[in-house]
Image (cartoon, rainbow, N blue to C red; front, top):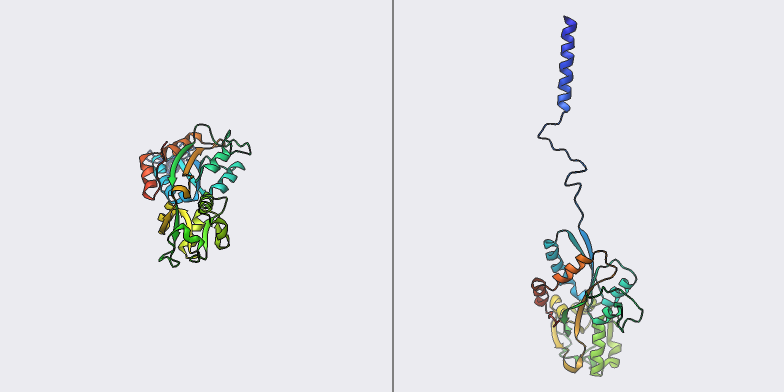
Length: 280
């Protein structure tokens, strides 16, 4: 009888132990087939854009991502010339927006400006997105008393901040000052920046008496505009083209972002800082 009693106790203890390790109906078990393990990372869309688009693109990309949570926009800003070089060297880029037609022309197959026989622009995706204006800006309180582009050739000005020849704003500046007949004469006064943001910073900090930047950069930096390029001073329109690139790994997403840049919501952001929308 004692042996029978002990056997019953042993069986009960084993049942109790197994029950303690059993999973109750309310427990959740995560396996490799759970929704969390199957979550797909968002597509990384690499957008190369001119430095003068920094503030607007950062704002617009956040709105685009909110509407398209499966896409992560990765922005790279620099001078259009630098970005053009990186693209032709095979940089990981899906979309390019330049501050001038020149750099896009140099990447587009069949364009007469494309002397290197490049084929970086996806056919039928290129559009003219924006138009800007070239302006003369001064630091707070305008210590040198600069009031016009013509003043750059006078004793009023000791130091001028301009973009270099590889930067669209620098190319526009050279055209403007050449047409004014003072380009060669002012060279000893000029400090050249690698992009428009650098020029803007030098003026804002008072390193230069004045500088030539886009109207939108003057707005973003809170700089005073004392003159604007118009008429015969600058015949080349400041147009920003955008296009999907042929080496894009995410063509559909790149086209979607380019389309979004042309929506009323995005255009309102551009126009708020001084961009104009060019005629198609």
